[in-house]
Length: 509
Ligand code: GLU
Image (cartoon, helix red, strand yellow):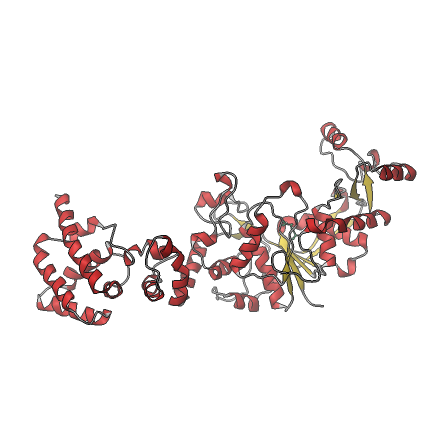
């Protein structure tokens, strides 16, 4: 039987990075086993529906290259539609089937009646202890139930959880987890408006879509007891999927689950893409907009809770597919170490080809009105790629490769520059101006020759050249910068620098 898995997010807001990891593990598992990866949108809770959230989910998967074989936004297959609200008419028959089989019942209690019970009784819930004191098809005679159904009175359908039994859940990560049916409530399966709840829709769809493995977050483990009862109720035990509940993602420091608030708190993204909510508190910066490469984000996320053993840390998507197995997913929470995410991004930027980087940094260059030709961008990328962490760094830290120096490091200038050096610096500029071969090695040779002729030391000249071209002591090799900028720009900057240097010394007093 071939593997079929689904990623089944609810469109209730921006997709949290933990959800992305769930999608990734489903994708890896499907690819590893030559199976099918499905995207299903679980939007039965219309009260929590957030416009734009579905598109956000689709765009996140597209950005990361986690393309579903079938699913909402990715083209169909025989099992669509893939958005549960579009499947609404289909679920009622399944809820009714359960009633007929004695595993569910019609419940007529009004919201007000239930509210009154909740107010009167501590921890009131609808379960085997309370259901015989409520208004439902277990307590009303059959003809009265029929009369109400025929009259179109509102009702919900609830799962009838039988007391006094163990419900074992076999989890591929956690082993056997046993739940007591006495602890479970009689979950609503079909709401008064005919919309299924998450539990019913999830099980019916997993069954109809022939899902073989349910890989999802740990927070769904308790619900699985109800899900097992549903499979039993329908008589679908033989094709019940295998379950794998993924460990929590923990805050960078301290205890507890990584929350969306931690992004602002620790100055890091916890969402794949930026999201603009109704309020500033509900607006977030994404991994994409921070300047992550998708491959780096995927590598980082893959290792949050999974490692195949050994020392290897860098895994491209195809290598992740090769190495992936559920057995190597850990039980305990995985810490969200953003420093590690940065490290991965640096590594992936360094490993990228210059032409590829040129393509990636072009939008940033465009936004700043910098030149965007391929040749220039890829040479600039080559000079900066060992030094940056995020994509915008190329044009921010490396702004001087694209525009005249704006920020001079005056403190260093004051240490390095002595106005008495001006004549010799001017003759260096003249020498550079006369150099025909402006390739970095030739230029370097010419300048070093000049240093010798003038009985100077490299330390007298090279820092000043660097400060003149970049404004800072950091950055690429000075002759590489000069070669990239070209003779005219280099000479202009050197001339401008003489004035800037003199000013700096004057203002230092
Ligand atoms: N709709 C659920 C969620 O938003 C899916 C849980 C599951 O995968 O079964 O996470």
